[in-house]
Length: 495
Image (cartoon, rainbow, N blue to C red; front, side, top):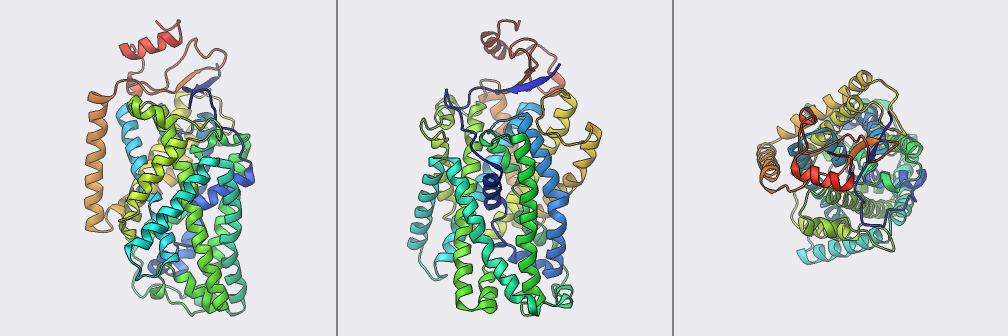
């Protein structure tokens, strides 16, 4: 019998509006995952132009596209703004879900806090004091928060406009440099020393990460079964164009050796290519890119916070306000405000390279659990309704996810071993996450997580519990008393 996913009401009687079209979703995901070639300078420094081009060509297809199609299947089969948290919740023991919640929260806040800093670095000179930095970060975060409160369609419209403004300077660099490009210069554009994989790979993957963020907004996408996959394909094509063309142009001239590349180097490239007007255009693009990134990631991660609150992970005094939607704009207003406040606090003291390492440690761990969840749910619930389905059998899906899983595992190992600081942070985070999740499960958790797989014909009868506080191997055992009482109140047939 066909199964379907059901969840507790996400925000009272007010539901998110399904307003996102494919082109809006592409714009939103572009500024949340790519945002132009800003940030790729470190890859060129560590891997050279040739190594970066090869990485940019390969990574979206062996890592990004498999992630995108798996996310499309999971997000349409389990449509919850909790996103990957709900997918792991349905396929793993409770302590794993709790660990995943903590991993996701830390990863989101770490990633969010990068963009106010980047924006301030484009607007302010390096010698500026702390006061202007605080003012710029607070102002831009306030504007970003306001845009998010007004609605995801507003954010998506911003994303579509920002996509044009962000890509324009890089296309102009390509056209201006094209007559002087030499393939020999590209091939010979390699670091003076061997490639530093421990720095190159995390930077490369950071520039290509974020495809799973679509899972947090799936409830606000029109016809997600068709829209998600189409948007992912266009996003990857746009990603390739935005990265490859300006890198070919810049390194093909032979004017910019790898060791000269650093954060913000595109401004120097733009000035050399077209003069002061191009320098100004590139700076404007940098500010727009950072603001677009910040607005988009606050949009997706705020919905993740709201979705996690729906699961009942936090005490009701916390979960209640966080899961509420604005009665007019239908946005998770309290989650947005909380997210922006934490982002603002963390952005005041950040170290970029270590943050990239920490972010990629957590992100690769998240992806490994997402791939596991996709395979497990295929095996456990083969009849679950899937508006979009990866066109493989369960063994084929396992094989298809093996390559991105291996990439994620390598990324995790490389990020952990990049420096003694990275190793120490990883050990501390792993210990903290495990202890907190296990402690919460056995001493603090008071109710089972919401979210069930049920028969499609009758939401109450013959229901199969997709997740309880038990492991998947224990799900044939009787329900715990508290869960039994709650399920009996919802469904008199549960005995």
